[in-house]
Length: 495
Ligand code: NAP
Image (cartoon, rainbow, N blue to C red; front, top):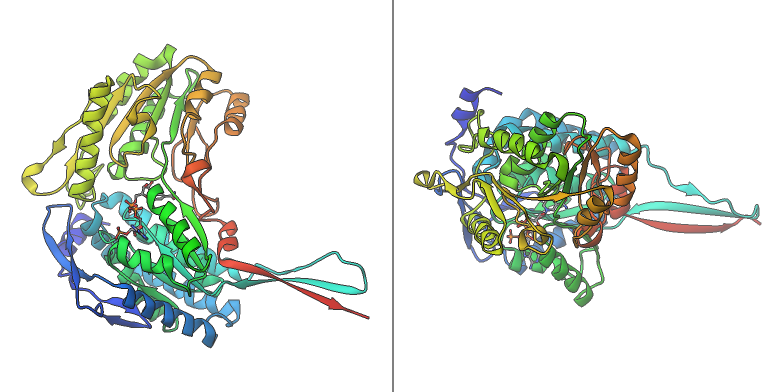
């Protein structure tokens, strides 16, 4: 990746996009569109359809018809594998174009976006494509006069609803296992990060995914997302996003057809640094990047830093030094460490958290302000508060921005108590040289992921998902197939 190649793509026309339904690009039935505003400079760069319930119904009907036709759902797994491997290749071949398009849409710094979006999505499609012809049904250990067979089958139509941070990566976490298993998919991107997923649909068609098997419906969550959640013909919803919307999806399911709902929600993840951490400089650097990359808009971000009292001041000096060296700015510049906040609304929310933390008595030790306002874009300083009490809003609520809450602890029991004093349970980390302590902490912290002496980077081979109000269901790994398949028993008399 070189800067001149990025610069050649940064002003490519985006134009007026279409919904992707039944293998065709179509306007919304109402003709309505939503502007695409780039967080880089606040300018409108294109438009996406503002789908209504009738458009969602059309997409669901196309998905159902394709499922019933069987050219995908009943194809040999090895056939689906070939197509999805071609899709992975196409994503890779178009990786830079996709990465730049995505950055213009949501502001993630290009160095991160290139790997975490197209390249990770390609890897995810490849992983599930490769896996699907190696997943078998079962023969149950029955009495000899019967045969108990357990078939694993696709569900039918899967609705995937994804957020604006890492739309391709998260879209692939859902679409790849769902499609590999033989389902049809209707995907609803976030209205502020739809462009790469519309392009993904075109690439899927080019790879040979049959018409109607993969559909993308853009629009507002409360309209298009709600219609998908309430559809009587969607068999499961795979959702990543905020807790309040997750709760609505459960309600929609109860009010409609009891579709399965899988929720991957937010977090307030503790990052715990013990005095015996193997390398405090590295711990400081990884901790800073573990919260501030992508302007803190990472579900697993280590947003609560717990530091043992005996090293607190020394560690904070290192952390602040690394943080203040981070370059915030144009996300299409390869030298940028942290790009733009995704929208003006999110920036206002972040600054509201800063004001509340100051009011509640936390000490601001770095950052706290908007940056680069003259560009028209949405940028914010990486921000650190220390002396944050568990009762304060900054300890309890997810900011989803570049704001770190630091709290000191005395000993292991205190660290566990503070780590678990949250309704969330998505990710966490422990920095220690003591192997016994590392294993004790892995068991004691209530979180779906516990990092030891690192933060982030867990690949597609391991599950990601939360405990408590971080949701349920797991993305990634072979376990994700459980969300998109059903078990059918055949009980066969042999006499
Ligand atoms: P969000 O507001 O909950 O939106 C997520 C998706 O739901 C978007 O596509 C949104 O569409 C849609 N939506 C909104 N209202 C809806 C409704 N009433 N019915 C159906 N769908 C609706 O979340 P976000 O702000 O995009 O993303 C940030 C959140 O996602 C954070 O909490 C973050 O922690 C979480 N997250 C979790 C993970 C994980 O793996 N656990 C990963 C990434 C992010 P619109 O955008 O059009 O409103």
